[in-house]
Image (cartoon, rainbow, N blue to C red; front, side, top):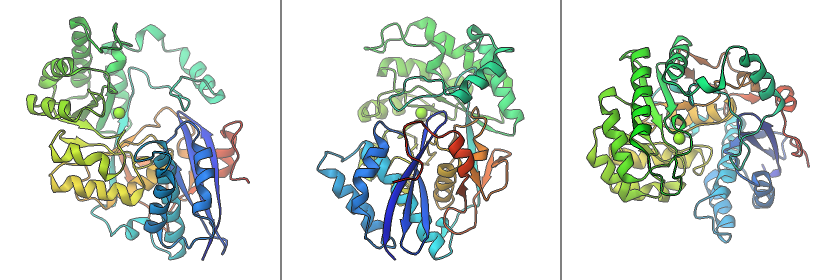
Amino acid sequence: MRIVAVKTAVVEANYDHTYVRVFADNGEYGTGECFFSPGLTGIIRDLSPVLVGKDPQHIERLTRELRRAASGAGAVAGYAHNAISGMEAALCDLIGKHFRVPVWQLLGGQFRDQIRVYADCHAGEGLESWGPALLPRQPPWFQKEQARRSASTKPNDILSAEAYAAHAKETVARGFDFLKFDLDAIHGQPADILTRLLTTQEIQQMTEVVRAVRQAVGQDVQIALDCHWRYNLGDALKIARALAPFDIAWLEDPLPPESVDGFRILRESTSVPICTGENLYLREGFKPLLEQYAVNIISPDIQKTGGLWEAKRIADLAGLYEIPVAPHNISSPLGTIASCHVCSTLANFMVLEFHGTDVPFWDDLVTGVPKPLIQNGRIHVPDGPGLGVELNESVAREYAKTGEGFFEG
Ligand code: MG
């Protein structure tokens, strides 16, 4: 078997869902999903000659060759691995289909076949869509959805404690028992963004929101809070101390991702579990964090960090330090299912992110699995060959990004 082509397609959803498909000379193909980045389909196109003509069975070797190909451009970390992660997942799907085994079997077998997912609720309202440079945008579906909601939502209300609490209640009513909110959205941009200083009033606002959410959902629902790397160590400590009474599942990214010493000091100074990892690549990226016990939980992004196998190895490495794994995930259902295959094989899996609550066509993007994909806050891991799920191409074409090919070329 030989690889004959590598092609891409992009769906403009809440992020750019970027798919990569690897075709073999026997007519079989596999599809993977990458975390978005500027120039991503160009990176995949430029890396593709590394795969073409090779035997797709040797997934690990091919992944190393892709990393090697990117290393001259400086890719010990960064965008190239977003591309490589999707290409590796596509190889896993292809080989799973070829040998008629699910990807979870390729990865060593399961600890569980139901994957607990948490709903990322963003802020008091969830609708958002971001371009590759993380600038807000409004594709046609977004405008329709916004118009549908505008009758009942006043923009000034969405960051209030009441709005967060109402959003939490609605999400629990849909079957989720684990929620995440954006803590940093409450105050918008801090008055002093460069030094990341927070005011006492801003920390009080955060505290009121978290208190309201906790009261709204009771003690049986877990609540995680994301800070998006915005704060300095002193303010992160103040936040952690203010939120300690509310039994928080984790405080995510209160510090910039490279602040290993800062994370360690913070973790040692608070009872609130600290989580980071969505910006880190490969085992090398996680090693300093783990060796220093700098956080309580890691959150690698499986569509970014280096591939399905690399994600499993990162989790296994974390297991040596008794650190659980709660993977970050903003993917479409295809990438989410790929993540579920990995999560099913991890001894130290905690919970997987679901970030598509507010994308009206999220579930429709795949075929071959029962819908809704998430039932009672859980996803059943498919047992079919490969990822056990296929992209619904007619739906994907409907929301395809202008200017990008659709598995062409
Ligand atoms: Mg995050």
